[in-house]
Image (cartoon, rainbow, N blue to C red):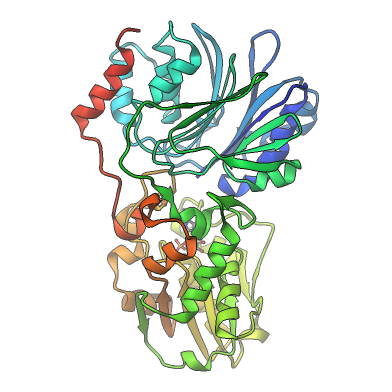
Length: 474
Ligand code: AMP
Ligand code: SF4
C-alpha cells in the first residue's frame, strides 16, 4: 500500500501542501507519515512519526517551512516492520549531496540487492526495501544523482512508484511494469506528483497525465524533463486491486475513473454471468434490497442496485471514528475491530431478504462477522455478492494480502466459504467481468492475486548480473 506525494513550486511554501495532500492519500496507509524538503543551504530536513497524518506531523511547523520542493509519504508496512525507523521519506547525504526518497510498492529482488550492497560495504539502517535504492545511489558517487537513479532502477525488479528529492529537483519514477499508479498534476507554475489524482482535487490542481511505466520525470526550474529507465519489459502490470479496493473512488487511474470501474463491477455482478458461485438456500429472486459493506462495497452495490432494479439501502452503518480493521495484528482484535466498525440496522434487516455487496473476501473475517450480526436481526435471507474474483494468491507487489494459508479462498471451496460465513448464497464476479469493468486491456493489468499469473521472476543469476552492472565503470 502506501501513498507518495511530491510538490515543486517556484515559491517557498510547498511543505504545508504536502501535509494537506497526504490527508487525501490517508486511505493508502495509516501507520506512519512523513514530509521531507531541501532548503537553500543544501540540508535535507524531515519530519516523520507514527500514526495518521495529523498525529504524525505538525501542520503549524510545516506552514513555516520555506521550501521550493518537498515530498511526503503515508505508510502501510508490507515489507519491513511497523517501526519508526521504517517511516518514510528516507533521507541521506552522500557524495553528490542530499537525497530523500518515498516509495510505494515492494521490490521483489530486495534480498539480492541487499546481499550485493552489503558485500560492497553498505550498512542498512532499516529493514525497508526502499533503503536499497538509496544505497545503490550512494554506490555510484561519480555519477549525477539523476543518472545514478536511472541506472539503479535498471537493477531493481518489482513494484515502485517513487518520489525523490535531489539537488537537480523533484524526481518521480514508476517501475517499467507500472504496478502502482503515479500521476502529475498542475496548478499554475506548481507541479504535483501523487499516487492518486484525488490529492490534486484537494490541492486545487488539475490532472495532467500518468507517469508512464518505466519513466523517470525530473521537475525543476527548467520545467519537466522525461527520461527512461534502461530496461526492457515484456508486459505491463497495473494492479487491478487498485480499482477493486485500494484507490479512492474519486481518483482516475490510467484514464479510468475508479468510481465508474466499481459501479460497472456491481452491474456485471448483478447480471450474474460467469463468476464462481454457490447457492445454499434459494430465494435470491425474493431479495428486497441491496446493502453494502461500507465503504469498500458501496460503489459496487450502487451499480448492483441499478442493474437489478432493487433499492439500495444503507443498512450496514460504519462507525467513522475507528480505523481500518485489516491492519489489526491479531485475529481476536481484528474480529472485535469489525464489530466496532460495522453495525447492521435491525429494523432494515428484520423479516426482509438482502443482497449484501463487498469488494473482496480475504481471510473471511469481515463477511463472517457481519453476516452473523445480520442474522441476529432475524433476517429472511442474506445473499453475499463480491465484486471481484476469489483472492487465492498472495501479493508480492505492495499490497498486504496474507500468506496463502490465511486466504480463505485458497483453502476452501466456494460452498465451504458460503457455509463458513453463513450466507444463503455467495456469488463472485468473474475475472473476465472484472477486467472488462476496469476497461484497460488485459495485457496491461496484474491479476495475480486472483489467478496466480505472476510476472515471470528474473532468475537469481540474471538478477545478480543486473545489480552488478550498476557498479561497473563507477
Ligand atoms: P477479510 O475480513 O480478511 O476477508 O477482509 C476483507 C475486507 O478487507 C474487505 O471488506 C475489503 O474491503 C478489505 N480489504 C481487502 N484487502 C485489503 C487489504 N490489502 N488491506 C486492507 N483491507 C483490505
Ligand atoms: Fe494488485 Fe493483486 Fe497484482 Fe498485488 S497481486 S499487484 S494486489 S493485482
